[in-house]
Each structure stands twice: as C-alpha cells, then as structure tokens.
Image 1 (cartoon, rainbow, N blue to C red):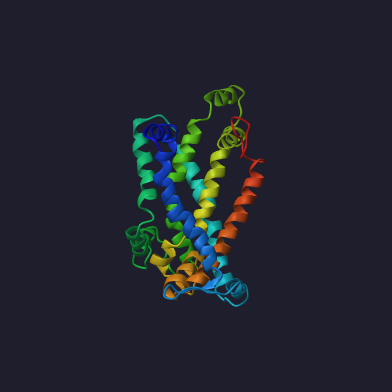
Image 2 (image 1 turned 90 degrees about the vertical axis):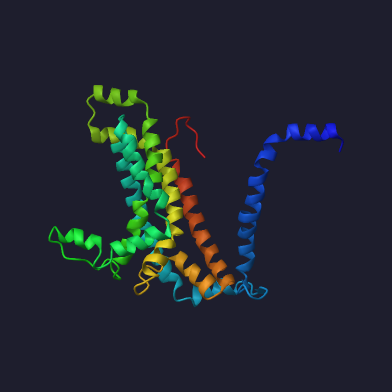
Length: 299
C-alpha cells in the first residue's frame, strides 16, 4: 500500500480507528469468554485439566439431580421480587422530591447518589453486616422507640437484610428518573392546573406516561442486576443461614471457584442467561402497551 493510499485509508476510517481499542477489548474480554463458556458448559472442566466433552450431561444433572438448583432459583426470585419494585418506587419518589430548582437540591442529589458509587464495595458489605448484627446500630436505633431487637441475619430476615443493601443503592436509577422528570413539558402541568385536574390524576395521566421509557429502562436494568446479585450474599451471610440467602450467583461461585466444577457452573450460568433473556423479551414485547416515546417510535 502506497503512502497516499494509506493516508486515504486513515482519513476514511478515522471513526473505526478510534473505536478499535474498545472493539478489541470487547472481542477479547466479552465475546470470547461468552462463547467459550458455552463450550465449557458441555464439558467436564476443573481449571486444572483439559476439558472433557460431556454433551448435555451437565444440563441433565442440573434439572434432575442438583438439590440446590430449584431452592437457589426460588431464593433469587424472591430477592428480585423484593428488590426491583421497592428500588424503582423509592428512586422515583426521591427524584420527584428533588425535582425542584434550588441550590440546596444539588447537594441532596449528590448525597442520594453516593451509595450507588460505594454500595457494591466489600467494605460497605462488611459494614452492613455489622450494622445489622444483634448488637449493631440498627437494633440500638429501633430500641430507642421501644421496639424489640431483631435477629436481622436469621433465616426469616436475612434475605430482606441483604435486599436493603441493593435497594439503598438507588442513586443511578434516581438520576435517570430525575432527568426524565425535568424533560416533561411544563405546559402539560399548566394546562392540567387550569382545568383543575387533581394531583393524583396528573401523576398517573401525565407524569408516569411521560417517563415510561425511563421506567422501562430502569426496570430492565434492575431486573438483570438483581438476578446476577452475588456480593451481598457472599460477604454478609455467606449464603446462609440455612441457605436462606443462597442466591443463584452465589451457587455459581460455589461450583466454579470452591468445588472447581467450571463446566458445570458454565451450564448453570447459561440457564440463568436463558431466564434473563426470556424475561427481557417479555418486557420488550409488552412495552409498546405501556411505554410512550416523544417521537411515537419504539424499539
């Protein structure tokens, strides 16, 4: 290739060259492990020896012989049902409270967003465990109101306790809701005020429809993240007590890095991927019935 042709190639492909580092990273660190795990899911692989082909044996064993599969999946479903609605509602409520023009609001927005930055760290998870211990700050606080101390990490309350950590990190969801609320045309509210429309009706007939696209996005992201939750179960409860917090992600970790059944864990991860994919497709297929876009379009 001559020098002039090389310069012409660079000029015509500047955009591609700029994204090349990202593209290489995506192919090497995302796509290759993604499809490699699919291959491993059909093998017996323990990280020490070459994988041995098993066909569908891993999947058959999961559905027929694994005593932890169904209980872990049910625990994860309970966790998702508990976390996702509360997190979305809390984020929307706080976003509506902060949707005002005031210098002090910027301070509160920062305060509410901070947990999203530090919430997933090991240090915060360990602090959470101390806070909810029998002699922790939470029991000391409720004791001032005459409420009996609770065993927050007991089989009946442990799942709720680790769910609170995820719910607490609603900052990113709140910021998106806040941006959506600020994008609602003010003349809609002014027209509703002139007509004397009650506030509750305004909320359901104007606010919710106008931010429905962001609700759709936040719902999808919260659902995917909740199904993949792992840190809180590992660091706060260790999957216990009595496997009451034995989330699917923790089961994957157990099989892959404790029992070194990497091929088996890969099969379990692909089942989780299939579950998330089906739920995602359902949400996408039903979104046109409740999601509004300014341009009238859809996905």
